[in-house]
Image (cartoon, rainbow, N blue to C red; front, side, top):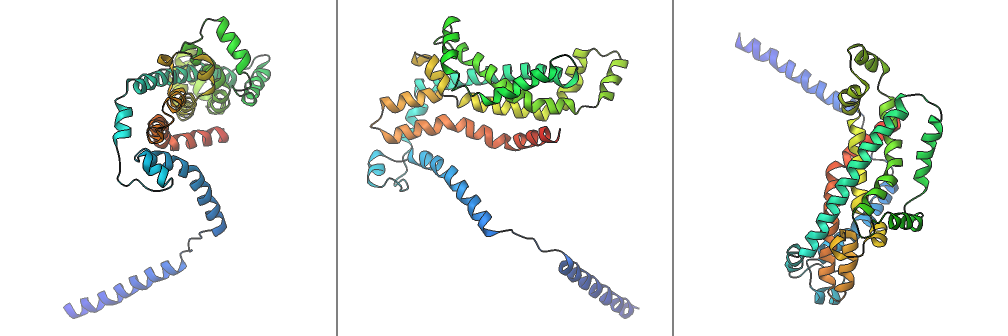
Amino acid sequence: MSATTAGSRRPAKARIGRSDRRDRHDRPKQEWGNPVTYFIALLFIAVCVAPVLYIVVGGFRTNAQITTSPAGLPNPWVISNYTSVLTSVTFWGEFVNSLVVGLASTLGIVVLGMMVSFVLARYNFRLKGAMYTLFAAGLMFPMVIAITPLYIVIKDLGLIDNLLGIIIPQIAFGLPTTVIILVPFLRAIPKEIEEAAALDGTSRLGFFVRMVLPLSLPGVVTVGILAFIGSWNNYVLPLYILNSQKNYTLPLGVQAFSSQYSTNTAQVLAFTSLAMLPALIFFSIFQKRIVGGLTGAVKG
């Protein structure tokens, strides 16, 4: 009885083994593609990452190490450059200014852009196409081109050397990108959902808050991330608008710090690293959200 059972098990195991080998043999091999493509991709990655690594690692060196071996590694590693920047009142004041400007600009861009996109996507009215074209044309006019008339307007409003003089223009110039991304999301929401909500007695505002916002959340997150990073890295507008160092944002603070401590290269690199670190971390955490939101916008 046991011999028969053992004999029946062996062929079964043999069949399973042959089946597994057959499956592995029939399974298509993974194709790695053209090596030239990978080489070019790695080359572009190196070009983008190498300067950032040089700045970060350079902050752990001394001026003597940078002078004797500009491309070498720290030996020994020095953290005093970073600690001196982190204990600086100037750095944290500029950090708070950048955070206030970034959050306020992001909130204004998302709220106003969501409202405009909802109207353009869900309602039909005269000059609707012209209005959408106007926002699309706004993508072709960066802030640098309009900086002179923009400065005159901000001066007439009395917002020179004021954070509002940075926030309001950034909201205005951030709306075109926001509208272009959000309109396809809102247009893709089925009209049946809106009709069902209307039959249940939901107002237009209630439909917007309860249905539109959750369904378009990927696009909202995407435009919010892009708006915050763009505001954090903005340099030209603060350069023209802000005069006193107490109102400086971090990009402008890096330039001022570099001029003040031009002989202390290592500390300048440490200050620069800490200034760009929040944007890098923010982008690294939410990069999948950005790609997903832009993919949804293209599909819509």
